[in-house]
Amino acid sequence: MQIRSDLFPTSPGGSVWDGAADVAGVVTERAGLAREALIAAIVEETAGKLKYLDDHYLHIAERERLYKGPDRDEYFMPMTEAETIAEEGRKAVDRVVAKWTSHAALSPEVAAKRAAMTYRASGADRTLFDACDLKDRSLLDPRFGATLTLRFLISGDEHIGGWAREHGFDITPGSQEERFFLTELAPAVLRESGEALVRFGRFAFVGAPENVTDPRLLINTFVWDPDADGRPLSRRDTSPEVVAARQRFRWQFWKRIVHECIHTREHPRFAAARLGTAFDIPLAEGFCEFFTKMVIDEVLATPETYRAGVEESGAAPGRGPDPNIYGPTPYAYKQEYAPMAQRVENLVGPLSVEELAAVFFQGHVELIGLSPRGVELAPLPDGMRGSVTVPEGVTTVEELAERTGVARGTLLEANPGVEADDLPPRMNVPGWWEHMLLVLPDGTRESPAQIAAQHGVTEQALRAANPGLRWNELPDGFPVLVRQA
Ligand SMILES: [Zn+2]
Image (cartoon, rainbow, N blue to C red; front, side, top):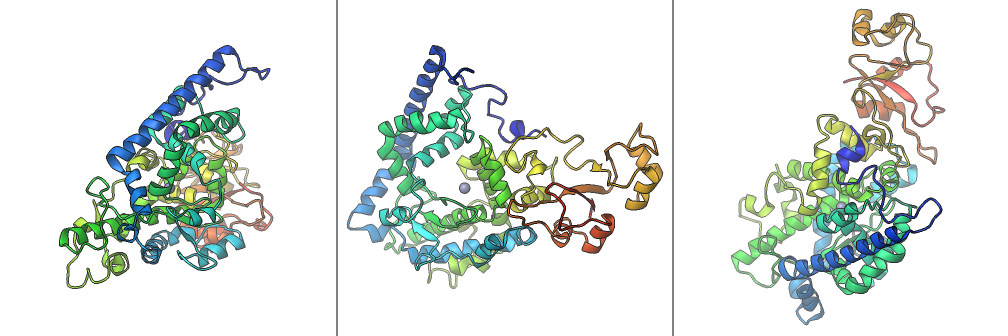
């Protein structure tokens, strides 16, 4: 597996930005023309996309008109209701992902914050903010504005992003592309489509400014029909069709919350690694939406648990569950995330679902070939966990057989050409793999108990397979032997 080609195949890979300065730092005439062409294409494509969303799909200008008009309460959900649904989303996420997050190594502050996290729409420690409300928006990080929305479109939108890829343009942090994006490209787009981008962000976008340490979430309270081209739904209309459409909307809203809440369960190391790459948004969204589907499909097998909290009060009693209300099952990836989530799903095979969960929830980014800071590593030979580092002190096949319980003959067969008393640094040991110990920059480290739980083995067995280790002193990335459960 190679992370770039498998997880971000539309990237130009080894190709270079055609607008890059030369080695002397000079932007040649040719590079200058390429830069102009890129700006022109993205300005035009972004304007076209926003107009399309407004005219045909999201009716953003209509949302703004309703929000500013006298009937706002008829079309926008009160934040108290949003809070109740959001909490149902959070509970669903934690019910499914706790089996992974509870064994993740997190610094004490992050762990405490996450354990205490709820979705609250009021009070000093509120976590839910109304994206439509300018005052609410002003309380959040100002970076969460039009420039970030544009960056999101460049990463996620097929057409807008297509032009970036055409030019070999990757916004890697600290790169000249990022500088060009911030000083030339984004300002040009904002001059042309700034108002439309802001309106799009305000009335059609949800998100969290910073997921890892701060779960504050901007949500959209506009009530619309998911099955009728985003048509506004009156909250006062009591006709059965409109009530049913509102219930569909509320499940849709709950699903968005599930997605956003999963972002807040991302491991800090996964975040640090993806932020070091040019494809941080596809990585974040791809993994998040992949697990969103997993949570929703699992929870919707027994929707009754969540129904009272999600649906409008008074609507549920006496009525049996209606699958039409929950939307398509199994869950279909949200359109703009589908290609990203599909690429993550395609890794199931080379990696197990448990391993993908270890990447996202437990920070084991080495499994997808990333260093902790996002450097793309050479793919590991023979699969991600096909071989193990021969432990220190083990020098012969007999010793390795004794350590692992794998017969001498089996070991020699699995490692053709290897001499019994001259072992290479790595060996195939059937039924065993290695775990790279995770130590965070602040010194937080995985405990033997956490590692054992991550692999479904007992701590005693893990310690026995790795005798004599000083667990509190091992460096980040130290190879630990683990028997496959
Ligand atoms: Zn997301």
